[in-house]
Image (cartoon, rainbow, N blue to C red; front, side, top):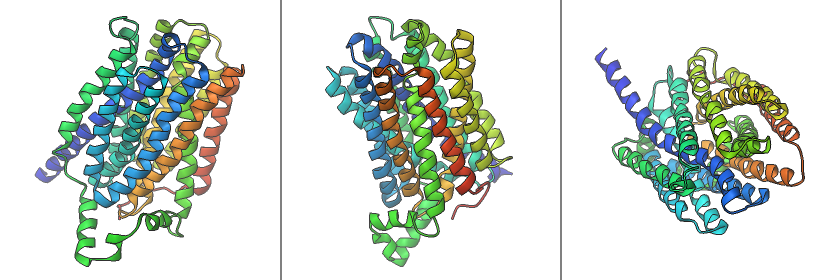
Length: 413
């Protein structure tokens, strides 16, 4: 009994420390969607230029997920965890002083690198550090900190960005400062037991695996043992990230296109964002009962329907209801996806596999905002744009149905 209490305390501490950093990461991504709307007014940027701001963030995330996934398998999850948050925090703070589009794009790239590297490493570390009976629930609860960060971003956007004394620059500084506190917390965080055992075994055996080149690790992802799950994850991550960044980074701008001013748009997005939390919590409850595969499929199907309904909505009530459902289902699906991904691989390639899947996904995150900017510039309607995102989610659902396997409560090797 005493041991279980100690384990619970340790799990809660890990969840709080990892989740705090995740919260501030989400604040940055959330604020970016509101900042795009503000920059359109402050700098007079075109839809294509605004699309590049969101896309360069995803380019950085693709690079960060790839590099730091490999780094975490070689040097440890904790080391990668600390370095990525430090990079994110510094670049986020400096972006408040960007003097033009070029400087902002450079800083958004480094913010993306830190963010893209941290997220798959964090989910891998938590997955390896908790018991299989609760692993899925804990990883989803870790993801739920993302919703809290988005809610805080929406509050800052609604109350502070419209104030001349604060604006979007002050909002970026507010986002960066607390992230340094999360960095301080992580110094006392131990590396995962699975990584320590794997590393200890490699050192004792002095095996080739210790010197295994990066190319071999990547080749392992496409070997007979892992090819099926790798292809499935790459398709799912690409489609989900493509639709998420295409829809959510443009959400305030879409609301303004539908006839609302900036302050009202920010307020309505805040109401929609609140639905993210119950999305995560319901997935956390279902994922150990129903399983990862079918929960992920169900919430992606909800995302598909909600995205289509949001695109064709033409009244404020329709927009609020479909937008809230979109937040509920899409962010719940993200929680299930982060729980599902690390469970596909063995310890020696787990962070590399999760990082590669996230990196492929970030390519979708590059194309999504660019596509929206291009289509808007060419007078394509919002309904058609959101129908395309619904189609993307359908492809992800089919990939899971045909290639996915259930990993509920399996013990990680």
